[in-house]
Structures are given as C-alpha cells and as structure tokens.
Length: 358
Image 1 (spheres, helix red, strand yellow):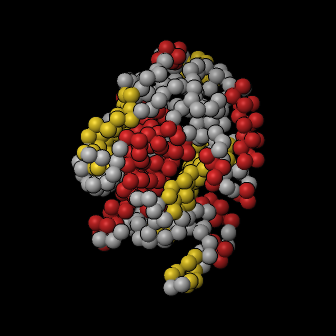
Image 2 (tube, helix red, strand yellow):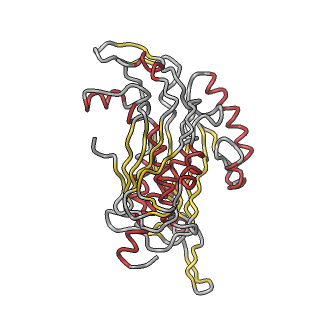
Image 3 (cartoon, one colour):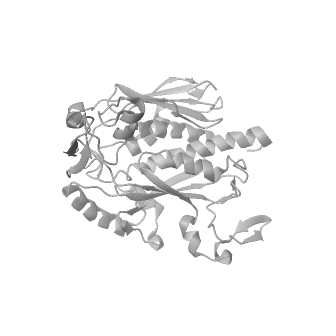
C-alpha cells in the first residue's frame, strides 16, 4: 500500500492494523544527540489513549511504547527511530456480523473495491487506531522543535454547540474529558453526548490547534506552502472533512480592511494588530501564533440500524456493534497536535538546510 509515509526531511511511516498484534512507526530525519526516552513519547500517547471516559471507546489499550532503534544512551543517533505499540485488547468477534456488509460512512466499500480484500476487524488499516502511531511520531517532532515551541489543541464545538470564546482558558483543557477551554460548555457537552450515546448515535466536532514560539520564515513557496502542508496533514486524520487556517471561511464575511492584519513597530520589532491569517502569509510563517482548525464528522460506527449492501450485491441493514466513540473528535485533539508538530518539525529542518537559520 502506497501512502503510508508523510514528510520530507522529517519523515515518518506508520504500519499495522487495528486488530493485528501491534502498530508502530518509523521516524527518519531526526538530528542526532537529541534527548529521547520512552517516557517522552508515553506522555503524549497517554493523552490520546482510549477508555479514559464514558465519552470515548472503552477499548482498554495501555499504548505502551517501545523504542526499537535510533536511540543510544538516551540520545538520538541520527538513524531511523522505530517505535512499537502492542495491541492487547482486540475483540475481533464484535465485527463478524459485518464481514460481508459495508458500513455506511466507513472505508469498507472503497477498500474492498480497490484491493479486492478488506480487514473487517475494526477497519484494519483504516481504523483510528493508526493515529496512536502519529502521536508517537509527533512526540519525536516536539523534540526537534524544542521547548520554546508550544503546540496546544482544544475542542471548540461538538454537534451544534460551540464554545464561548470570551471564556477561553487553556488551563481548563486538562480538567475535563473534552479538551474544552470553556468550562460551562464542557458541562453542556457532557449532557448532550450522554443523550447521543444512549440513542445509539454519534456527533461531530471541531478542533483548534495553536502553535506558538515559531520563527519567521517556515514554509516553501509555491507548492510546499506551510498552510498547504498543514491542511494536507490534518486532512489525513481519520474522519476529518474540513480544514481552515486563521479566520478561514469566516474571512469571506470580512472586508479587506477587517481581514488584513495591520502592522506596527514595537521595540524595534514588527508586531501584528490581529491574526486573521493564522500566522502564515504567502505560505510562510510570520512569527505569530499558527492557528488551524479541522472538522471531524460524526463517528460512522453506530448502533442504529442503517441501510447498506453486502458483498453479494443484496440490499441489507446493518448495526455496528463493538466499542466506539460517540464523538471521535474528542480523541482527535492529541492527533491534531501531533500532525501539526510533524509538519512544523519538517519545515524547521528544511528552513535550516536552506538558510542555515534556526
């Protein structure tokens, strides 16, 4: 299967299936002598790990990572880093009833038509289980970026319910199961998702990722623009159906003078008076916070009966059993952070190679 690798200088390749013995990732292009140990990666995997609240799948995976190569005496060696995450809580029998039926909204039909075979156990390679490998790669990318760069994600909308941005508090994202910066909305989401879950249905979400502390100059015009690579990275995440940078689609309703981020000098430095561009101008970072949002569709695996067809061409109905997220967007927050980290690490290395700068 082509398409399992991502990046240019900082490049990673994920492997494994949802119900196979293990999943993992090979990360290449990491400079030598960076401090790296398994706890550095485990911290980020624990944030994505399933089964931590009633609003996510109850599959109990510890997601313990093992470093198999590329690290010696606690430092990267400059050679490929291979990371292994064993699967320990597969329940493949939950999927036997869909072995010959295509789940609406899933990749079942397209995989079957393309390859002539599909792993129906949890979706195989198309499962969101694969995103644990991305989070592991993102942990390595953060080491490349250094402690001066902060990448934080927050869930800003579930279903029709959006946060009140006047109540935004980053500290609250660690204090509720939704990564929500608005405590009042977090309580409302809890009630809303309880109803969705009991109805056997699901809900979509919007996630916002903000990266701070980056230099001016990351990004390669014309076809390797930073925002273009970020959009592509976020669109590769399972169930993502839309990406916007900065003001995004809302910029359509602004006038030119409202949308343009005016500039002034302050203490010998250029400062911007707004950030509708999301920290990227002409595909190149401006030094402001980089702001990206992505939309995650409702989880396709639901208990409600839906119409579909089977491999024999019969019209049938299907109910998807097993353990599923009523809102898969909740666990997409650490995944979005990881993909942003990987893109930024890649462009930072490319910037250094081109200019010799930091």
